Image 1 (cartoon, rainbow over the protein chains, first blue to last red):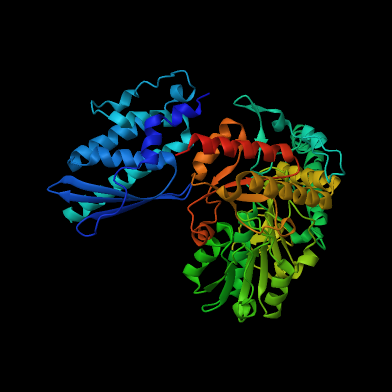
Image 2: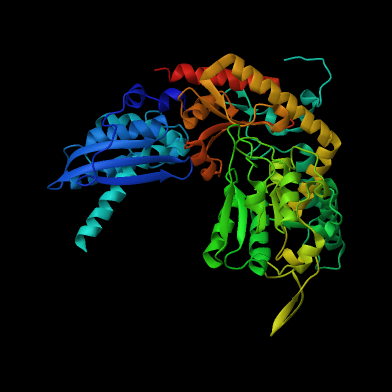
Length: 163
Length: 416
């Protein structure tokens, strides 16, 4: 049975207590993306400034639990300075880590080897701390809320630009 | 915690009826505090359903063989028990539905479509569960009804100062008898009387009320009430709509199919008489048997005792939690136990409900974290979610103590 320390790693609690890039950016020029977790009522606001396809600045608003807030905080630190393409790759890698694997859920794989289909060589850094979340299936949506919000927002922007 | 004073319910003995309460989770005794979400089931209900499946199961109202007769009798006997439990004039007034949500959708779709026109007013309250909001909003897409909202006062009571103006000219007043978030018991009779005086139909979401209070539909004064079996020790998959017989009779069917007809021709159909007019398809037969057994179980405890027990436990919870945590805890809803049920939405320090619930789960304390299907109320309260503990017949002071200790532990774990 996974314990609380599997979920609430110290680095997660640190990001929860001291969230990075908390706040707003003026829109425009920034883009504002909004996401909800209908399960728990959490909502997240992601503000991004894009310059030549690079995330030049990012801010996080909204409310949520320690997992959604720390994941958003870590995401904000991870995507700043990255190109939109790099952000997409990072999102794919992160969501790969968050996908449920039976063996991990049954606790047979204590350390939680990277799922075989994460298949990328992208370094997740601090984000690795969120790996334990997959052992708590109902919390996965908390961890992925900010990432889905950002990815969906970027997709909509791209769709707008191509029309 | 041993107590020898006269208690409303002997929880120590009663807990033996609930097999799941013997389970350990994470090495701890299970402390189940989510009965407002769904109640646990006593062996009397489990056995009744099991026995029915093993001995008497067949489809109902179809065959002439012994099993079919026994199954039909079991279904109708359950209906009689439920009717008796709520003081219905006739079993024909009890329609079995999938749950309370479907019961309310039935009324909105059948009565609503037949009786509402563009410009008609429907009065709801801001503390409603989504089940008494969204069906009306769906209907509002097709018929331009105006939704009016009864506000709340600072303690989570309905603010009825403008009730007469709100119901003036209304065609429907539909509201909850007890909030699933705040625990607030609403003055059903007073609102129903005002609504009926204004000529409005009255529907009551009694999902949290019927399991916890003696219920007499004549006293409530509504036209329809909806409730679910699973919140009153019965199975999932079955609920009930009670309605005044004359009104149900006048309403068009909701779902069409088998069982709900007297005759079907190529050019149309004739609906069956009540209650089957509203029960299309094979009904939840074993679930009805379980519903009946749950009603028997609660009746044997005595609903007056059930209510008294919950007032005792509510007093204990409000007192001990406030004593222990002072202004670090905020418990929503009325502070007077007599004005509320045993549902406690907590804000504890600045911890998120999910995080509280996670720490409590490690101690096998089950509470609900989320918006409780009442997002308009959450917005009204200015929160995204609450941590909600709720009690029922099998809970006692030791469960509240476990909650209290779990909150303390959560506070320490997330201490800044």
